Length: 253
Image 1: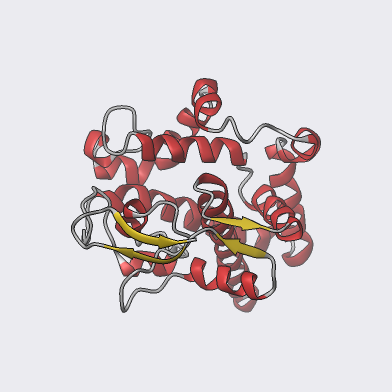
Image 2: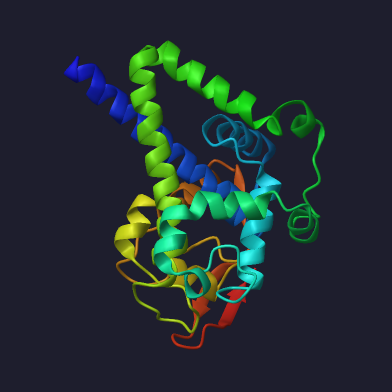
């Protein structure tokens, strides 16, 4: 029983990591900022993974995130610690996200380049169907009882790190560049690189978040693997920033 419980916990953590990788590479870097382009097989794979593990509609996630960048830490930012307080953002981030994602004006304004296609209408816009299939797959793999344990681990981890990036990542940590986000390497280790948030806000169109020695960005590592497999191409190379300035000094396409 203990071994099966440990297996369920491990599966839950693995599913959370896969969902996190899909979030940072697909939803964040590829769709929101167009920092890289994914080839069709990988793109469709990420759509399926996102559907099964999160139920997120990509255009809603993109719209909320782009609005965050447009209004960072000012009135109108969907999840600003400067406006709402870091504790509220950290612990109620899912509710803040849902409120912004369900606003049709936000989606229309910030994700007009991502209209629903046939796959969305048939499958990917049906969040409960995707999540339900994900639950069924876990139940088949682990059995109903241990599937519940895996789901609890996955939900707690995935939602928790999202709140940490948006809350802690705009309050605690280092600011090598002039923006209100922060860098925390320990958080980056749990979030596929998202904890290097100050770097990201300094250069949003960079597919690489690790810009300094000693920084590790799992999302960028995955992107490099995808590039070697000819499944992805990166928009900017050899990105260099001026510390403290928060502006891109040179970027070669």
